[in-house]
Length: 324
Image (cartoon, rainbow, N blue to C red; front, side):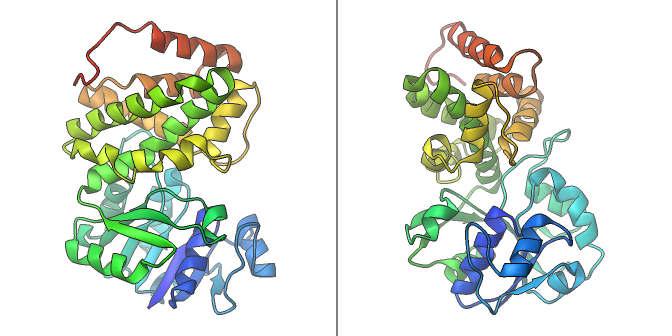
């Protein structure tokens, strides 16, 4: 199977490595001049993986998308809409698109699959691949479980059967909306976890419970299955995101609470803004999300702001645990 992976950063390079390992003919695309691409092109490796010598590295987007039957996208979620304008210049409407990324578009609240549909990709040709797991663990041979979801049941089964291995056990998702919202939202909870690691460690248990509950409320209000919040895409990814020192989002929150800046991509920052928008649009109470948004975008001293938001959460009026 010819597969192109668009994006050769941390996760994209792992996907190329993994799919090559599964016997597929893989092309890895990155923009010319991008440091991640240039390192791979020059050495065939980065700090995470060493690519199979059969993997084709290219900065020619037309070559990458027209030569593949399956196009995997792994880029920053906020850049997806503009990137798809470039991709759709080529004859790709019959290709399968797999989104290996987690986020919600700021300003619109659109899920990533919705952006693809609005760009001209048929919904039946779209799947998402999400769930727990860090590259550093996978390359050591430590297995994990993930989920592939799609509105197209036949595509979902085909992809799971093609991609499963002893390293990744896949499950079939059954709620594309909930899978996408849950996967994106766990990064917001990761930022909250990093703040708690610095200021009050014992609250991670309540964060896991209350965080999953507010995401479930949002999914339900949007028309999805609230139980999706308790699946692999969200709650199942908490250990990886809320506790691991590999997590960019947890590290972002930790450094913010220390008054420092984290320079790498933390998707939860933009996602907190997008989720705040969705909460207002659907009339859903998202207290943890709101707190993370204020921590990320508020003014004044970072450390003081983190402490104030935790205090504000504790001063909220008492409610039934499972309130709607």
